Image (cartoon, rainbow, N blue to C red):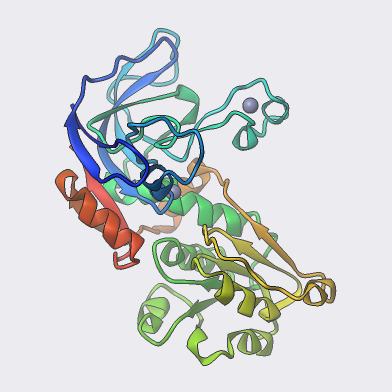
Length: 332
Ligand SMILES: [Zn+2]
Ligand SMILES: [Zn+2]
């Protein structure tokens, strides 16, 4: 099979020929159709996590067809169209797993980081992390829902915000353009916070009710004029920009971080104390929930499709935020 691998932290992508892996007794072999390119792929590419074993095949927004299953796999059958996301496996034994919180497993495995992912013609997955892709969704549209979709939808759905509440989406890129659509369909008064005027038209096209240009430096004030945000979903990787928005949270408002910004945030504790505001991260979210809601409300991601050979270009466009708005690699 053809596969795209990274041989060491920071190395270029290499397109190599490999043996098609054989599924073990409790494993599924998937013939990959497409794989989304996510900012999280930089963890494998650049070696941001300790203990990654190289060479590694990245990719955790995988859609393909079940090719073969191990003897003890009962749910999945050859020919089914399925997806695999970030969560690649859990131990079923640690204290988090014993409480059913598999996402918090102490030995959790991430697709494309600890296990070979979907930048290849075939991949192995565990049966308990696979989801079914419904017929209504094209594979290229389904792939980004498996990470970008389930994270933004999960964060909003579990935020405690209710219909009519003021919810602001910070950033209108790969995560943000999905988050805006989810916020609107969940019934929130949806504000888009983005730099300049370039994305204003798109924000309204996606259904946003208010657009605020953060370059004015008045975004938090404008949110307070609207009553204060119940939620600010932070999708733009910029610690300073996030800090500046916190005064725009209303009473009990929460800033939810779904982006891997590395620079620290500076927030006066007094601001959180008064009004009982909070800042939290969110990385879980259920893929099936996101897929079901997306099909029900006809939300599809805006994608740029690249061929396997164009992986370096696709990755660079994603990393420099020049892609509109998620990159998807066509593998098959
Ligand atoms: Zn991801
Ligand atoms: Zn566990």
